[in-house]
Image (cartoon, rainbow over all chains, first blue to last red; front, side, top):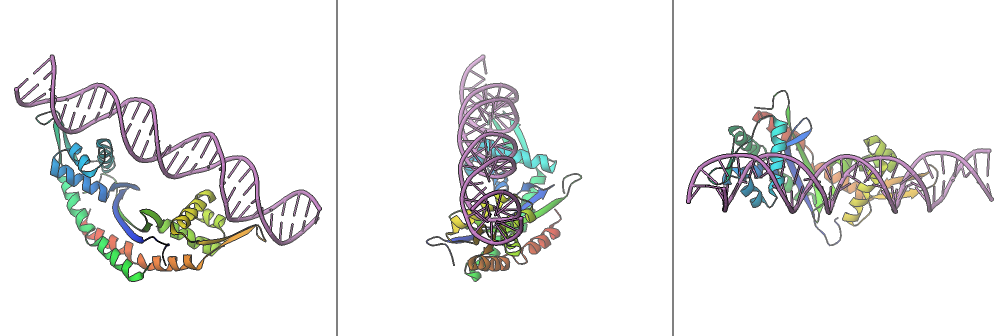
Length: 116
Length: 116
DNA sequence: TTGGCGTTATGCGTTTTTGGTATAACCAGC
DNA sequence: GCTGGTTATACCAAAAACGCATAACGCCAA
């Protein structure tokens, strides 16, 4: 039972919302991790294959909705500027990682059993 | 650790894709169930609070991507027309329901333990 | 036979969202 | 002051979503 010549696959997603608006998901998590790793929003965006504009918009929206900063930004300076994560952002990353642990795997296993 | 005066909540989603395009999710499942219950796309749309146009577009896209019909449609006739689900659509509903069984509950339980 | 009714079906303009490009602001070092 | 690399934002373009308007259809009642 599947479409002719095509393969059906299951996908799943967890995210956090505040007032019905997304504040944290897998894409945003990856973005923050790359900011943490690279020390720059710009470099993180490049690593993810998205524009700086998009990355900045994501972070800005997250912060506005949460009501506290996730990224400490510096304009100018030695390397032109830099960005680091706030302690609150790091705690978010940690907890969110636990939340989604094993999540996709569980879904995929159940999916295999069903023979879609 | 949450935004001042607001409540963070976790949300999750499962859906099926074919060639990277969504063919089945919770909204579409509900739509099909309402078609099944009401015998009409129009009534189902109203029950969901969406326009007929939108409901029709969803179903049309699903069928195009899957490559087989989900809804048997009748134009004109006793009540002006009617729509019923194909056997394939009913099987989809059944399997998808199993797939997502307990899913949200599991996520929510884990979320509570973490104290976001 | 003809007009009305309630559905399915779809064209098309409008609105909203999203994306990308260009440009300014910033600051250490040379 | 000029350069380099970053953050920040304005502004226009493209795309997607939305919804209104209208046609097609076939029973049924008049």
